Image 1: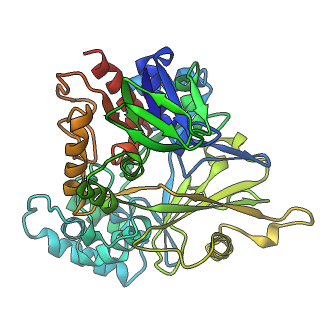
Image 2: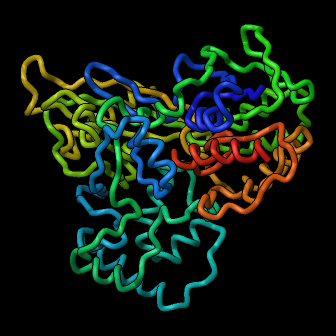
Length: 457
């Protein structure tokens, strides 16, 4: 029996590729899909942040297509930035012409001064990487400010292996051109996105879920890796031949029996941000063209904003806009207000930014909001992560985990995955939090496919 902890995207993909008839999934919540779950409420569909598909993996594209019976839309993405009352195209480093003076000239001069020297090897420190990429002035105004809001840590605390193509390292010619006017071509790594017409982003995983065997309300209490037994909080016991864990790695280690103190300490060192989602239903159409917006102002809680109806008209009633705002916190940056207080402050910020216009409200048609707490948001790759992961994975290796060539790296190159396990594995880690990786949804699908492949070796 293959026992899978968690019925999120990685867990569902693992079950699908191992064969649903051979698997049992234990899910703590009363629903599946985990981080990509969509909530239907008062005519609105709310995802957990702006989930969109832009995968280059044809396998995932086809699976998602079949899941919604081709009922999706492909369209160009429009992404923007808000900075001290100004709207700037994304990425801002190649749109300096929209940055107000004197910051514009200071950013350009700092960038050019930095680029006069030869580009060195990639630094391990994110602060050094940003200074090398953009110069210190732009770094301080934009990515450094955003890092402390989104990642809840100063850039110097982070490594750089997670970056990949997620942050544009611009050519000098593009920065100079963008300082005087539009470049005239897309510079963001996402150009076209795909989204289901109905049912929110989770609909893309419907094909993975179909036929699966899920026990809801099964909150894992303990894991015995020696006896290969999982006990849930209501006392039920489940034995396994192979275990696939998608629970957050610190939670999984805490649940395991007889864990050495040095491994428990390593698990405690792993850090992840948490998220407050402020969902506001507004009785007027969106007042900006962007699908989502990054907010750099340090005095604002709002970090990223998206408009649900811009992904699908079916996500909101006609004439309404669903504005979702993300506010991040962690043990390094604790919340100073209650979630409801944050909701009120965010709504005031959206009014100040011109995204909500109360003058357009009419009798019986006013805004209403609800707040959702997401306890696991983004894995934070600080300078202690690799050492902590080495201790954890080294211990789990003694219970049937087969080490993989990239298990300490935040990213996986699915187009060139070298041969991995050469012996039978009894334990797999899967997903963003289970593997402690910077995974997107297509990575979670591909990981399930990889587990299916490895299990057949």
